[in-house]
Every structure is written in structure tokens, then in C-alpha cells.
Length: 179
Image 1: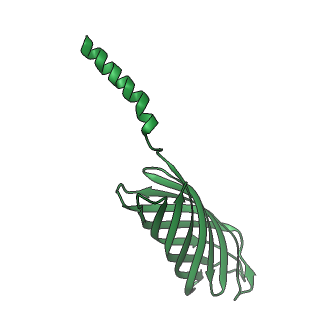
Image 2 (image 1 turned 30 degrees about the vertical axis):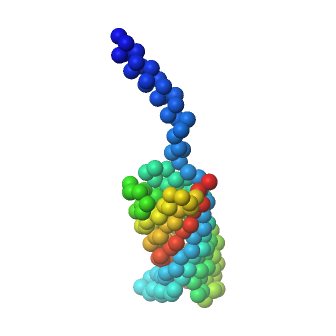
Image 3 (image 1 turned 90 degrees about the vertical axis):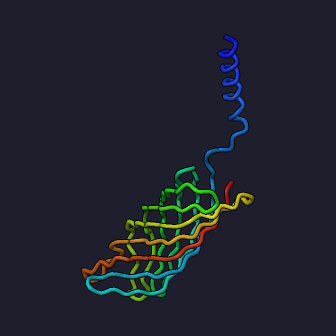
């Protein structure tokens, strides 16, 4: 009888004291990103590829198995400029300091222009896929990501019954501050 009472008291003590010393399961973060790569415009049987770069900012929640974030991107190429708002989900592989991940995003290209064709972009859907690794130094409130990314934007404008698509692909570096 005393053994059962001891086990119950130990379990009750652990249940009430463990949450007081536990770390939070999720982290809020904000960050910035920069990338470089190329952008291809597909129109009928023709395509044109040029070097491109991107700049962005994000705000999100980092959970143990995945990450969710809202992201703004500015894409720039010689003749093309675009603004994107994206919602992303990242699926993380369990690891300690270096953490690989796979991500998907959906959003809108809500502004932009093609200076060469003298047209403004229509608001259109945008889709992206990401593959990368996170470096998580334990002593700092920062996380660093290195990733490859591809963004697809269909039917960005219409000129003479031609509706070109854009594929933007790049290598990207992110820094995230954990609150």
C-alpha cells in the first residue's frame, strides 16, 4: 500500500513541476533573406533566361516538426520586377545543429512590370518549392538557412494573345531572429 502511495505522489509531483521548467515547444521569429539565380519567361515556344536576384522578409512560427511563415519577396531581373506575398510550410528532418527541410508555398504576385515589353503584371497566383538546411547555433537567438528555391508564376500578363509564365529559381540565404 505504501508503494502505491509513493508512486502516486511522485507522479503528481512530476506533473506539477515539469511544466514549470520546460522550454516552450514553439518559437516566433522574424527574418530577412537575399537570393541570386535566374529567371526564365516562357511564352509559347519561346523562352528567355536572365540573371535575377531577390530580397525578402518573413514572420513565422517554428514548431518541432514543421515551420509556418508569411513571406514578402521582391524579385528583380534586368527587365522584370515583381512583388510576391507567400504563405509557406516547411517540413523539418529531426537533427541537432544542422537541420534539413523541405518546403512548399502558395501566394500571389501582386505587382510588377516588364520594362522591355512595356506592360504591368496582372495579379496572379504564385507557387514555390524549397529545399534547404538550417544551422541552429545553440548559444545565439538566430537561425541561418541556406536553400534552393523555385517560384512559378503563370499568366503574368497578356500581350497579343500571348500569356507568358515566369519560373524564378535561385540559391538563398536567410537569417531568422528568434523572439
